[in-house]
Length: 164
Image 1 (spheres, rainbow, N blue to C red):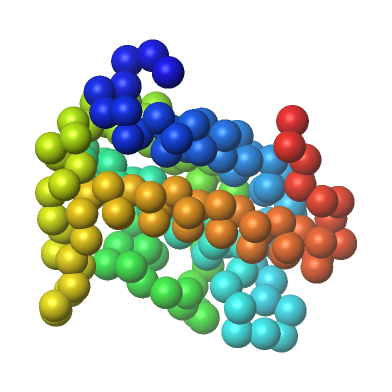
Image 2 (cartoon, rainbow, N blue to C red):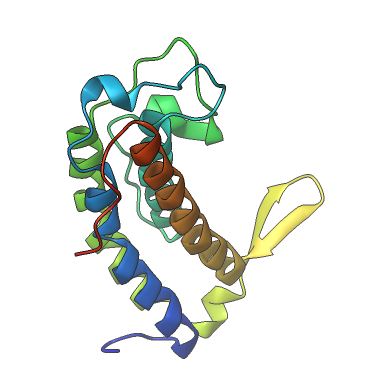
């Protein structure tokens, strides 16, 4: 892989690149009405899941020194969970933010040194993780959220997510 400072990041960036187009694929053609549906459950709907996925990339970019925020920052800052009374943004708004942060974060991930990957990040009382652990967890969580949205597609009667 070209221009990656730490060899530890090769696999991570490979997954990042693989998952990047999945955001558009998994949210493709979902109506604005369906984005807000919870089907009489307390499950996170597509509107929240998509926004949380976008926020995760922005949050990771902030950990790496970028001062960027998604348009729906107020709905997601400080790791807010789903809010029953909130109207979540359109998929097109999320896609715009995804397209904005993705190349910036990829560049930042490519330029992390082995030493920087060991930096400890305080996550709360008596809990911290290395930057490398945070990045690997974030990449795992991206796949998890994409899978949840893919399940919602089927539950709402849409065809399965395409991969190309």
